[in-house]
Image (tube, rainbow, N blue to C red; front, side, top):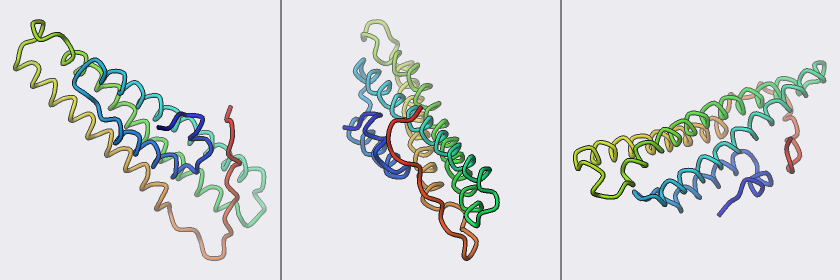
Length: 165
């Protein structure tokens, strides 16, 4: 089980993979415990969004400060890939947040719900969870297959792992 601070010790791609594994390990139950699980997933993905946005800022600052160096193009590509991945993660975050509504309805005691309403809400929940997973996969793909670097352009060093501000 990963916690946000443990994710800071991983590369961005490794952190996305760790969160995906955590989500697979902790599926959303159709009970009130599912609300806690979704909240956990929201916290993990939200942390990733913040981290990737911060890393993108690091690379953009590096490129601005070293605009005469050969590795500027690499820094801009890294900033762009991290920003695009963060945007995909915000989509996953949105879907998980939207999943809370149907899950709250499904979690109500049986005497408080109408069966067809529960089926409809279950489909809405599953749709949001599928879309969240797809967005998480797209974020991973964005980082795993960024725009190709120009020939002969060196890679910019990764930001140092550790606490982010």
